[in-house]
Image 1 (cartoon, one colour):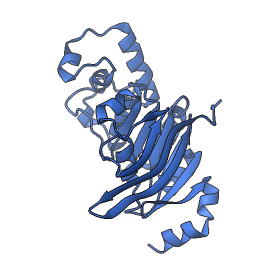
Image 2 (cartoon, helix red, strand yellow):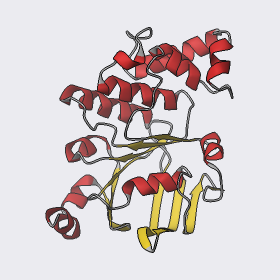
Image 3 (tube, rainbow, N blue to C red):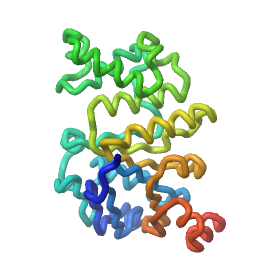
Image 4 (cartoon, rainbow, N blue to C red):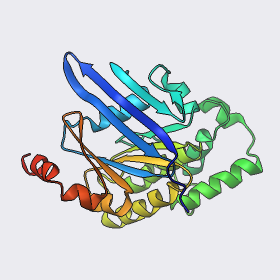
Length: 248
């Protein structure tokens, strides 16, 4: 059962300008606990910039981003991660020359870097947690496979696993199914629906069929502003949204 109504992420009047161009313009966005929110919009709508602002990669010109009551706009990136925000970029960033198991082991939260993680003992709690995550991300049969040999979809799942092993309360995913086969997309929908139990997830996606299968709510951005918000059905029937998508 998903717990609703508690606002985990509150974005208010968020604006960022690059040389006078407003990539995000006075945005208000509220995400609830355990909610899976999809953010859609044409190219240049500001979708990825919003994720960059939440995770601290880009600094806001104005406005506020509050995560569980903590103001993120003034925090460095690593502190935002420590506060419980995990981010997956469009291209998977995994350690290709290490095994699947080792990739997850490095990501296990122990406050260590790559070197430290290769030195520490594999305790049973680490092993158990890694096996739980392997089950979740459909890689339980591939712990000793070199990550570089995985299919494109499996690499994406591994990177999601590297995030969820850190137990973030907010997960930001940028186009997680781009380049995936049909069956990989179906499994990814199942994976995202499962991992949004106990955490909030924001997904940027172009694939509308995929969004329909995963999203509790959909936010449509256009030219850095909020154009529409609601269920996928209500958004798809919204004349402003139709005009923006068909006009491009």
